[in-house]
Length: 46
Image (tube, rainbow, N blue to C red; front, side, top):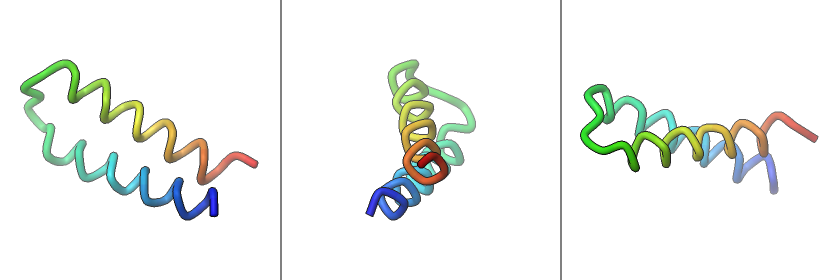
């Protein structure tokens, strides 16, 4: 279940990164980096 949640969060983060090519708000950039990190950590780490 952790891997599935991690994959979903990582894919969401990648999608947000594609949208944020030109970041409009520092909060969105921080949220995107947090989601990417959390998704990677849940998917890859045991």
